[in-house]
Length: 113
Image (cartoon, rainbow, N blue to C red):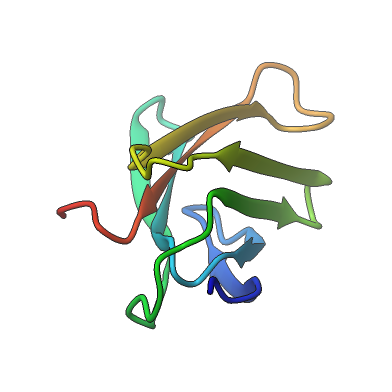
């Protein structure tokens, strides 16, 4: 039986705090990509699940990412009964910041580094 969601915290390249709600038997890590002031892109591990999977995840997987300082708050959910999804990529626009995007790569526990 899959376990209930856990909560973790992380910081991005600009020191912005994030709260992550995740399913511990599915999530391995979340990486965040931002464009820096000099125009280059930077990718950083936002959160890494400290626990190894104990059970098979259920057929439904939910992950929520929020950054209260920027009003960014979204939740994704997938139905994956055959366990074929290994990575989810979400590109967002920061609320109130014209044209500034932030990308998240959400990787599952079986995926190779």
